[in-house]
Amino acid sequence: MPRTIGRGQPSPVNADGRADRLADDGAVETQQSTMLGASAGRSQATLVRADPPAAVPHVCLHDEYMALVHSAHSFDAFRALADRHGRPGERLVESLAEARATTGDGPESWAPAVAARAGLPAAAALGPAGYYADLAAPHGNRHVRVCAATACFAAAGGGHLAEVERELGVAAHTASPQGEVSLQAVRCVGYCYAGPAALDGTTPCTGASLTAQLTGREAPRAPVIPVADDTGDPVLLSGLLSGESAWRVWSRTLSSGTPEEVHREVAASGLRGRGGAGFRVAAKWEAAGRAPGTVVVANGDEGDPGSYADRLLMEADPGHVLEGLALACFACGARQGTVLVRSEYPAALARMREAVRQAYAEGHLGPSVHGTATSLDIHIAEGAGSYVAGEETALIAGLEGGRGCARPRPPYPTERGLWNAPTVVNNVETLAAVPWIVEHGGRSYARRGTPDETGTKLVCLSERFVRPGCYEVELGTPVRRIVTELGGGLKDGAELMALQVGGPLGGFLAPDALDVPLSEAGLSGRGAALGHAGLVAFDERVTPEEVLRHVWEFAAAESCGACSPCRVGSRRGLEWASSGTPPGREWERLSRVLAEASLCAFGRRIPPAVRSLARAYGDRPAGWDPQ
Image (cartoon, rainbow, N blue to C red; front, side, top):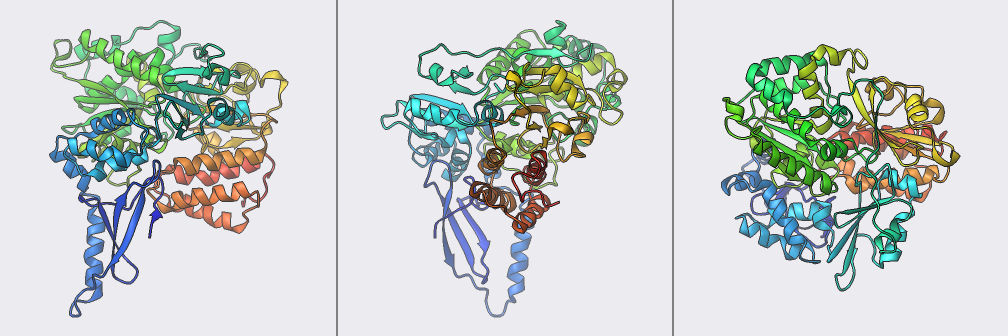
């Protein structure tokens, strides 16, 4: 009987595209994956009797099956096949993107041919082609991506997508009958300070006249990101505001420094990851152990709607991002670095690629860099549209050419990551701070911020503020000061009803709860999270019920489908939020399952985010804050 297994996710598959699991009665259920739609994988399940001989106890079959399950961590059939065929990895995803651009048909009509050219079974291409939004969505001769993420939702009250659909004459996630135009709703395009926004091909259009720009009545408008420093001595914005050139620290370190010295300064700085997890950077580097074959990945898949800090750094100061990555590779003993840039950032992708070409031309990368024994290669990879693919294990799966689904840990990526090599994944903003730390010393960096959360942070303010933009502040800065003094409050004299911090699954603060330091510790005490530190303001134009439904829509759409609690729970929550009926004790039970059994932080963060929303709006909507 056909059944959907989440976001294009069939059960774990074997090399021949089948997935076997033990049925309740001891039979083996075999699922043959097929693609019956553009955005969801479906499975045809049939029962095949495989009862053990009478002389063999049933428990033996069970024990053998469980042994196979437990050994799945050490053997991946698709990874083994790809390994034998030259590790096509991201080249497979790029080939799928090229094939998608030439047709409006579903992946089942073109993905198998891409797999065949790579020497892989059809399922190896159908998986990512049905999973990633950019590959699953129909593409016409003109492809428009409209941002449906939180900041644009707050800027236009959620009505801009319907206006675009009406003006272009095509519904989201479809193409016109003759293939002239296609429309895709995405989250997000990084113009949170000027929303609502869209990408017409690679041309950004923003603002209240979005539909007029998309229909040609007005010229496309895309203002640059406003930036400002609140620290007096910027770290992350030093290249933009102080004119400090990139690669100076790298050249000096290669000639007179050691990997141990770089690691020691970063350890002394107390630098933590800026991508949301907040793990100590030096500890992650140390976990890789400078093992042969180590890879360092710069995560530029900035998925938190409301944040555009990584986009700013990659577009306006790509040299410092690459220099930070090079120093991380040096400290970790890595000869290979990769930067993943989200597909919704076409300008950042182009700037990073050009910066890499320039770095090679100037001798900063390649064999025997600057005449030393250090060799380093860096290349740029493009994402394909997935929020969860920014999680480090999902990111690695994507770079290997698979679905961007979270993987169980252990093993951790620093032990077995990209193609089973030790892999260090650091956020773009994290790496951008490393050159300053190495040049000025870890202790100088540690004197900033708070004792437990040192340094500075880029904070992004959404379109609703009087002065939206990207600000560098010290960690521990009061949120109220950021909102009122730096951001100037809300424009048009609007009243702040709720403030979202750290993305859709970060959390919400009430207007009277802003006297909290911008830090993970301070925000977690209020049921929120720092995340990428994007601040999205909601005024009275959007109701609490609409915000709640928006959060659940995001969770249901972006769940990778790898675990049942998140895949099923996010859809159940959306059903409740759409019905307008208080969920009562059912939500209390579901929230425990999500928090305790989800595979990654995406599912675990849903309950506290929803509860914080209910508290921020004074328990309206009702029934969503059981504590």
